[in-house]
Amino acid sequence: MFDWNVTLKKQDYLWTNMLAGEVFPTTTTPGTWSVWQDFFNMLSMGDHPTIEPIAGRPYLNYSLMNAFLLKLMRKQERVTTMIGDSIGVPPVGVEIPPFPVSWSTILFRVFPHEFKNELKKRKLRKDAPQYLAMVRERCLEMKAQIGSVSGDALIALWRDAIRPLWQDIHPLQDKMNEELNQLTQQLKKDLVELCGEEQANTFLTTISSAGELASLGPLVGLFKLQNGELSREAYFQHYGHRGPHENELAEPRAYEDPKWLDRQLEEFSQSPVDVTALIERRDAEFESVLHEIIRELPPKKAQDVTRKAAAIAETNTLREETRSELTRIVDVMRAFFLRAGELSGLGEEVFFLTIDEILAVLSGDRSSVEQIPSRKKVYEEYKALPLLPAWIRGRFDPVEWATDANRRDDLFDVHVSAGPPEPSADILIKGKPGSSGCVEGIVQKISSPDEGGLLQVGRILVARTTNVGWTPMFPRAAAVITDIGGSLSHAAIVARELGIPAVVGCADATIRLDTGDRVRVDGGKGIVEILEKA
Image 1: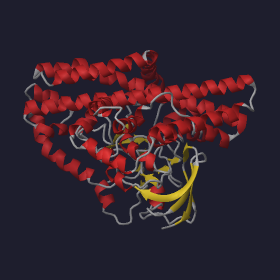
Image 2: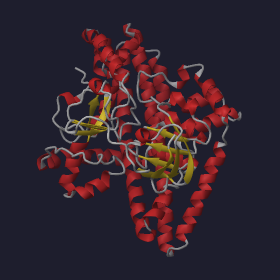
Image 3: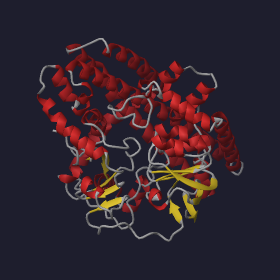
């Protein structure tokens, strides 16, 4: 039985997609959810799942996470400080319902589970570059095999090769996320003590990566392709698995559409930007900020700051490469599903079965096939909904919410009276520092990468969230503002790499801003000032 909406049966908890919103921007198919369940299980707290579906979209149980950390850290202020940047904090006035977490669960279920995970993470991290190179080779081999095997051989390929590789890369991705977050927080703490929070934020939001960043790959690839430095075949080999819905198995990849690359090149050529120059300019800016800070420090402190900044740059590069190779495995799994659909006669309806059901179908048990029509109906209904609130508390009916003319788009709380919040007279929108720099400009609100052609050069991109599918737009933007995301989100990292000011995790920027508004963006401070409404 596939569960679409956990709030219909769970108690009064607070949920958020501030962490998963950029990874899964819309409703997932049952097949996609079932393979990602391996990753979600790894993040569970004993018997308590931390990520569950609301309208088929992954939401984090904030009540559970908060209760677990509160048990360990004792004070709410410390918990809020710890997870505020990576996950976010609830809107003002929203209470965090308690979640019963016992010491026995922590000591005998969570700690042993985490200890086992940590051993695996450290082993993978030690050999990460070699491991990722192996993943690329194995993906090529497995895709070639998928097209030529059937029946038991296809089942064996999943169980013996595809799934083990999929399960292995998750701990490495989690380790890289943790490592980058820890390094960043430690350097920020040091810099705040040495030179104050403002200068610390400016420095951290200027650091660029070491080498080509994987999230920038599709953009850099277009630039190279346009200049004759890269062939179409090489482009797809390197970047064809990336896209705005790259984690959804049912979504076609870029290389499956013969006209996709031509459309990208046409859009890119309409507003040509020298990507290499942007990256070089940001590198020079970082060097300048670094020298400005360390020249005021004692030699040992200066060496320590320089070393930690280099570690952040290297870790960020490896983290983004890990994410890219994880997505390459998703591409292999899509090929597996399509082959299963071909052999079973189900075609693309195969995505409405879970992986266990598909394996059963390949073994001769087709009883689950009768579930497909009802699942397709629910999926299409949920996928047609607007973006759901980033914060949800209590029982939530997404269809009923969508029909409410007075609904809030940022928050749903069963304990708060319906109706949008009063228009704010505050001219400031506060978020998190994403990428340093200060710029004034006109807002262009974009709801999906399909609207990328609307973004004129020099306008300020405002979006709910972004992912790698949005990257080609960034060089045209004077600045970026998002509702969802922290300092390590896609929007922050890519904007930082290109030297574009960015303020992320604003929560309600898309509600308070409209296309045509004039704003001032200060990426180092994490503040957007509304200068003039359209």
